[in-house]
Amino acid sequence: MLTIGIAGGTGSGKTTVVNHILDELQHDEVDVIYQDSYYKDTSHLTFEERKNINFDHPQSIDFELLVEHLKILKSGQTVEQPIYSFKTHNRTGQTKTTQPRKVMIVEGILILTNPAIREMLDIKIYVQTDSDERLIRRLKRDINERGRNLEEILDRYQNTLKPMHIQFIEPTKEYADIIIPNNKYNNVAVEIVQTIIKERLI
Ligand SMILES: Nc1ncnc2c1ncn2[C@@H]1O[C@H](COP(=O)(O)OP(=O)(O)O)[C@@H](O)[C@H]1O
Ligand SMILES: Nc1ccn([C@@H]2O[C@H](COP(=O)(O)O)[C@@H](O)[C@H]2O)c(=O)n1
Image (cartoon, rainbow, N blue to C red):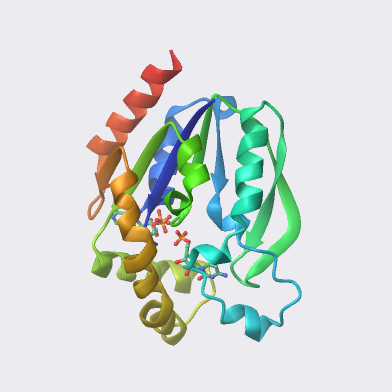
């Protein structure tokens, strides 16, 4: 199994890059493990308490389960990837059956902060986008798709997202094998990544 990590700040375009890679491969050749699926289970908290969680800190992620699932996939077995709801800020209780594939993509803002995950990745990619561009994208996406309002997004940006990005996410760029500049759609970089993947699969 070729394991590819795709990190970068929120709104940098990670999911978009992942989707371009998926487009080029056969459906049964590739699957994705989303870091967002591994936010810790917070069913014991009220909705108000969950809203106040710092979702940009590594401690918000159940890395133990994520690492265990990657090990299981690498050993050729299937896992049940949790499904997360950004509306309730919690796992839904449902899972997505994820089978081992020739290519497994691990995507998320904090994946390169974890040494055990870095160790398991064959190719580490960091998607690099300026913070003003990321904030604009995040505003549009969170209002349209994640049920957030302007004040909520800006509060989170100033109080947790920006400081956590500087402290934890941006420094992981140094671990990347490939950095994709993504202020604009970068088809050339994505094609290079697709070519590397195809070569490794031969
Ligand atoms: N290069 C780009 N230029 C303009 N918009 C982009 C670009 N890449 C992604 N987007 C848009 O920005 C938003 C966030 O992108 P997404 O891929 O979800 O980022 P991430 O997964 O890193 O948070 C989406 O609405 C997406 O369509
Ligand atoms: N309940 C939650 C959980 C996470 N977030 C934010 O999602 C961002 C990570 O996802 P991307 O797709 O943008 O990489 C992260 O910055 C968290 O702040 C949230 O808003 N609500």
